Each structure stands twice: as C-alpha cells, then as structure tokens.
Length: 309
Image (cartoon, rainbow, N blue to C red; front, top):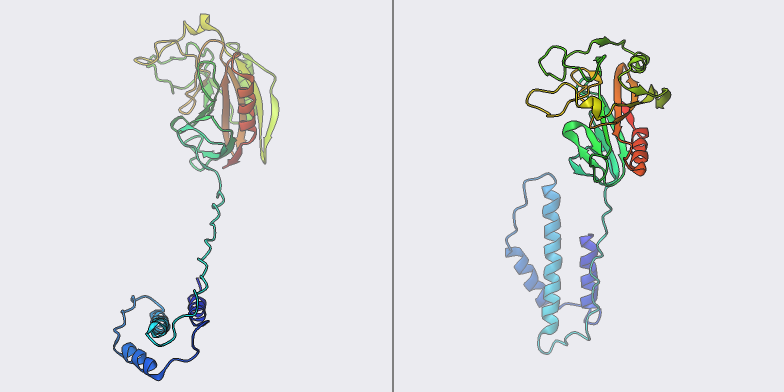
C-alpha cells in the first residue's frame, strides 16, 4: 500500500467542501502538540532512520487532519458541507497457488493424480525413479510399491527389485535349510540385461514370453512376461519358518529380490533396464482376472518412468 497517496486522498476528501486556510491559532496549537508528543522508538533493524522519518511525516499529516476536522466542527466555524466522498477499501490482490516444483516422494495410502518419486533400491542410494500416477492408486513407500485401486487378490502391484541370481527350482528355493529368503540362488547370471533375460527364458519352471526392447530416454532394456504355475505346484513349495503358512515360489535370488508368487497362476510382467550400470527390474504383478483397465494403467505408469542414476 502507498501510504503517502492515502494521506493525500484523506486530506483532499476532508477539505474538498471546507475552507482552504487554517487560522493561525489552530496552526500554533498543532505545532505545540507535535513539539511535546513523545515518539515511539523504532526497532533496531537496518533502515531504522528512514522508518523514523516516515513516522514523523505520517504523524504530522495525521495531526493536521484531526485538527482540520475539529476546527470545522467548532460552533460558528461553518461545519462540513455535505457528506465526504467515501474512500474505497483497498482491493485484495489474489495470490496464485505456487506451481508444483517437481515430483513428490511417494506417500502412503490412496494417491491423487500426479508425479511421484521413489528410491527403488537401497544400492545405489542415488538411483531414483519418477512416475505419473492416476488418481486412486495406492502407495506403499515402505515396500516401494504401487497397487491398483481397490486392490484385492486379483489386483495389480508395481514393484522393484534387483537380482544377483535365479533359483533353478523356484519352488524348492530353501537350499541351505535356513528359510532365509535372501539366500543365494544356484543359477549364476552375468551382469547385463541380456544375461538375465536369457537365464529366465532357459528356466522350465515357468513359461516366458519372447522379449522385446524398451527405451527410457538414454537407458535401454528388455520386457518379457512370466506365467507362474498353479496351486498344484505352489502347495508343495518351501516355506519360511514362522512366516507364510503357504508355500512360496521365488524366481529371483538376492537381498533386494524378495518378490514371490502372490497366488496360483500369477503373472510377472518384467521390464529390465540398465540404469547407468545398475540392472533394475520393474515388475507388474497381476492375474488373468485383473481388470484390463488397471493393467493398461499400470503399463502407462511404467512407460512414464524417468530414471536418475
């Protein structure tokens, strides 16, 4: 707000219909009162001298306004001619909502449509993935996962993992008898995307599709789908001590490869990408009965991925 302009307008309004001169006695009274009026000390901040001068000027102007009004209301001095023109109130300038500065960290719970960021694996800690997610999907940051709206046993999950190896028999994965999910697999694989794809296709414990190439900016990879077995196999699989009462079917081995079949006839749609030397696996976990619209939405989410090493 321009304080000087407001003071000028007040003076003009109040004096528009009254005399244009103030008697000398009124000026003398005003000067005497200003001389004895105590000034409030300014805050000890920079530019305090400028602020003090502004207060003196504003105080003088305000005192003159009061004196003029009082003088015009005295008996026999004329009075104000008519009602003063109302001064319009300052118009509030609406503040715009700040634009989003970028993707936000994936929160827990039902999501609004927007761009989200996750750290898919612990090593390297610098690796991040941003994605565009439609409204209604559910975030699970503790598991670095997304689930389709109203997820159930026929819902869809998007997750991330790294694999050091594979199990030749994903059903009999407890090779050292400890029940630890992160024990090494018995199938060693090379470091490339193609090495992992070839090892998956060579395993007869599940059916794999023909791989296709995918590109995410400067990062290259492959995509394929695994059809896992039914309950006749899963019911005979190894179990974790004190954990799941059902048998577990582990395809991948490694400390960050802890995804297993979520039920009979589960399907893994895998996107395997080399992100600056890190072989990252993106998994869409779904079933034949999963809603087609949710599956298409999941594929669109994965296609929106942007990787930062």
